[in-house]
Amino acid sequence: MNNYLNISTFLIGFSTAFFCIFAIHILFWRKARTRFQTVLGWIMAVWAVWDAKDLVVTFPGMYRQDVLQWILIIDGWSALTYLVFLAEAVMPGWIRCKRLILLSVPFAAFTVAYAVWSSEWVIYSYITFLWFFAWGVVITGYIKVRRHLTYLRANYSNIDNIDISWLSPVFGFAIATQLAWLFTSLFASIIADIIYYISIIALWLMVLYYSWDFRPIKAVAEEEQANTQKQSTPLTEGQLEQLVEEQQLYLNSDLTLADLARALNTNRTYVSNYLSQVRKQTFYDYINQLRIERVSLPLMHGHPEYKLEYVASESGFASISTFRRAFVKFTGQTPSQFETLGH
Image (cartoon, rainbow, N blue to C red; front, side, top):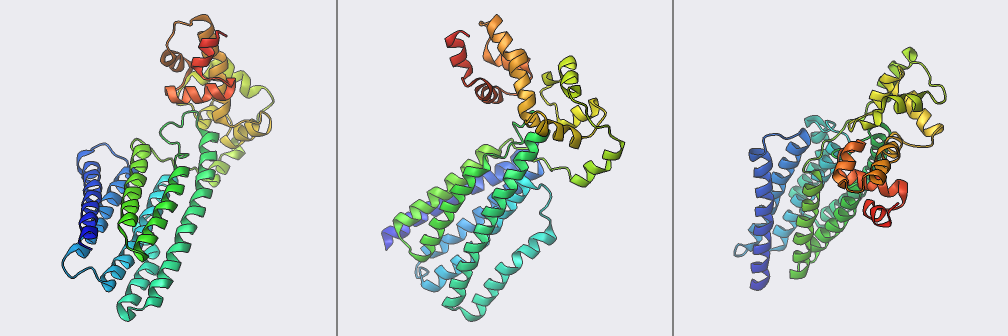
């Protein structure tokens, strides 16, 4: 038992330090931060406190069933942090104090119920609730992420710092982490603790890595788009292509669907429908295809000495990574393969 407690103490201390360091860095050292990053900083702080409280079981005489069950009850509240994180990523600003209080009601109810009855049936009911709550977050989140990603590709040509496709692997990792937590809560062991703490740190490291420069975008409500529809002019076939080609709008690295709609004296709905129904493409794919075909390929053919970073910049791409992805999608080769084969 002493060996188990010593290892647990180390793991708890390491995990607590990890969350403390990032919470302090984000909330106090990082001056230029978005609301999303501020929320992420507070989530790190909450997790630091959650991990630190586990140290109580390492004190003499505290490794008892009743203490472990109280830790399980308190740990269950961490499910809210996943929901808050997801909501801020996909629906920035949706989480408010009132909503957070309402979402906390079932957790508070189970906490009070256990304080009153301290019964096993409360614990098992709580675990069942957490299981369904977690799957509800995952399923709803997956649907929201897919819809939001569709919205981004329909409205932006540069999604480098607003792309949310990285949330998909996070979902899978989060499920594995919560299963590890459930196992360690019900069956304490050194191996289970090691797996849990490593997985939770790996999960949030993944989140921090992908979201460090992330800038959430709030989807424009359909009602707002509909308000301008009466004053807008429907598109005729070829009108959009002619304008984009003549004015070389694709060279604008931050071109949006709204910019194109204004240039055409119409609204986003007409432009989006035209692209999807006539061209069978998203705005994102259409603009990036033009960048590759009209600029990147001619530059690489005529000037093989140019570096890829220069080609990407001249083509209207905001980053080399987006350029590489688009190049592979529309040519079936990487830029390096294209250069090697000497097309």
